[in-house]
Image 1 (cartoon, rainbow, N blue to C red):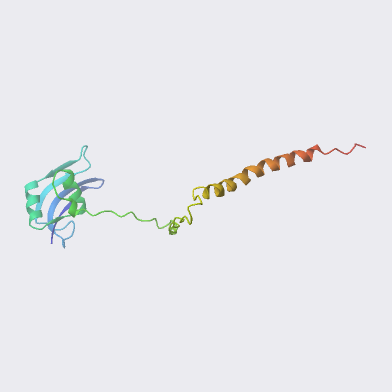
Image 2: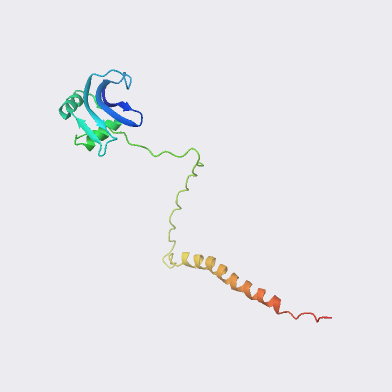
Length: 156
């Protein structure tokens, strides 16, 4: 199978790439069939030169661009490159603890009779839960104030 991919050339910390057509079995720095262009990402702005007619010719013959090459080709105007791009899946961190599955939501309560009002039932349940916490705090404060008010023993 033929593949259009980047072949790294250049010095250390100064990448430059050839855009080549090669057999998928060949090594990344191995032999290739044709040079289709070059890519210099270290330049400002990055330089991308390609022979679009040759790239389209080889893609029509069955050559598949690599994922990175398909993204570059799409960015520079070639159409229908989405089918060659792989979608990235978000991976969980190995250090993070496994997430616990969330329980399914409870089914909605069914109104048994027309006389009862289901909207009023949840509201009183929520208010008393909040009200005791508010009532307890003031009840404790006066008790704390009463203790220092006790008469002191006479000094001898």
